[in-house]
Length: 112
Length: 116
Image (cartoon, rainbow over all chains, first blue to last red; front, side, top):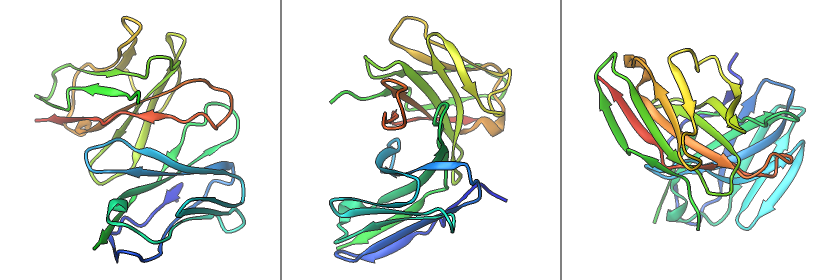
């Protein structure tokens, strides 16, 4: 069973739509949950991270973690063409080096 | 804004040749990492480096790989005898301190390695 599963998409939405990106995982030791954004020909950039379960909001972005279901989500409100990128979920356990385990990434296209 | 830089952006090599991928981490950062991403697949951790030694490595990071911080600014990844399956995007990342998760790893733009 793969540790982190993420649908690669692509997900194509019109400008202004609410976008939902999701990952599932199998390792109960994961405590830190991250979302990275990766533009074409660039390295991943950390968007948000949360610790354990719950929600976290930052502007148009909301991250949710449901540890009981081993399911995390990233919501993007009022999506913009500039949000078009690949979104990678990543997770790590607490303590130690916090090395993230990544999902495959979901390609998002927001068209005007 | 400080950023991680990597050179070259694209490296083409013949199978069996040695390659060195170079990274300049952000200047006051102390923790350094290499990751790779095979086309269409996940970003995978290779190795972390702190205080001039490897602090953690994955199963991928076998004897064909080595890392070095030769001069206090560069951080290099060497692949001694490249294989076709080493073709991937290689990302360098750096982080300022350990102190808890809140310290973000900053990634470079990557070097695309093509082994023919």
